[in-house]
Image (cartoon, rainbow, N blue to C red; front, side, top):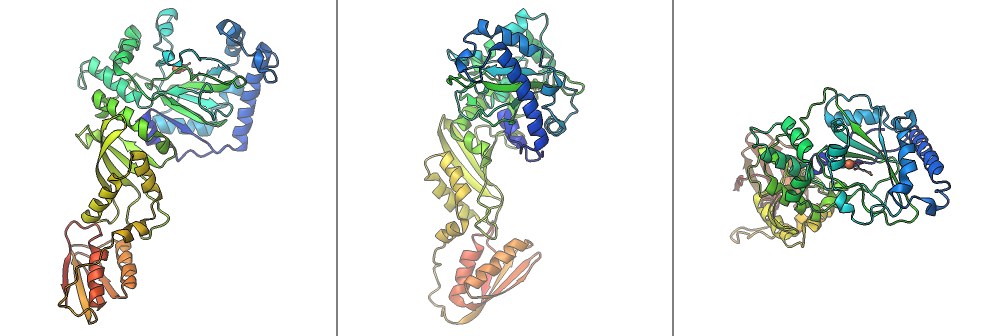
Length: 476
Ligand SMILES: O=C(O)CCC(=O)C(=O)O
Ligand SMILES: [Fe+2]
């Protein structure tokens, strides 16, 4: 298995990521072993559940035999074996640290009908629930990362799905940082003490998370969750026959401290703004982001001090346009105003569009109804068509005879890029001009042919490129 495409940024932005591995034979075998172990145990406690769903437990008391039984298998090699060396490598990559051997797990089955009353009341951070703080002899050991493996497909919502509040890890870290005296003073070990003493109730009351996200996935999907991401025990399970099964691992790095409790990123210090951004992006973009069509960047606040804005990177369609006028990402700057409303401040590409063309595009994108549509449009546009739609006839100098053959000399401040020169060659063909390009500093382009075409070429082929100053143009 190869996880090199793990969307690390997704994990950092939202506090979780679901990795859909390509499941190979060794992993299938491991999954099967774990499934068999758990199903054997379930069948032992609730005979024939797989054939007769009504045998599932109806309440906590009914479930007691299972609670006891599962504790006897949570450290069994068939269960721990789910974390194979490739997953181990993935976890190391995410944590950027070595990982301690995994000695135990938590088998979490959500039975039909479970959590139907008020699933949202179960919001928590692991280790700091009332039960952890007040009923256990000591708070369970600290860990860095919560990792779950789905044992069976969990494709529909409201089927006991693991449910979390994306982005809440930023809000929580920001809250704790502020509570403990601000960026300069706050210490992660104090955050740990604070949570041990106070739990999270007061904090959650103030932070008010929104847009709980139900994770869906296939058997074998791996859910990585930031340790500070608020989550529910599960969504309600409306099914009468389906039990959701996840094995959870609480991953500890070597030499674990508490530094993951509050990380003092720029982003972490501005809870209000992040709260707004968190709510905002979820109402609009999360599904697209999960599909890898765009990502949201609220992390690089060290670069931008304007915290009222967020940046969305949307993927342009790389197949249709040639050469690439739009770079590999289109950057949108957005000011969220309230849940769902926003102002699109700017659009920018690292491709070759001029300021004028950017302005034109911005105008067009602003007409679209919402951010989802904007991102989808950027994903799907045929950029050749788009550029063509911007082509306007130049105001030709009527004193010039359009049939006369002339030469136009364009001097660029610098011209190095091969794809820019290729593009100009392409366009010269369209305008039936001969072209000669000398790259360098300055760069020189000479086009020969019909005078009106030379003007058209200059207009279409040059000002739409990404040079802030129009290059010198001499015709004669
Ligand atoms: O049932 C689950 O998948 C997770 C439950 C949970 O959040 C926990 O046990 O801490
Ligand atoms: Fe939990």
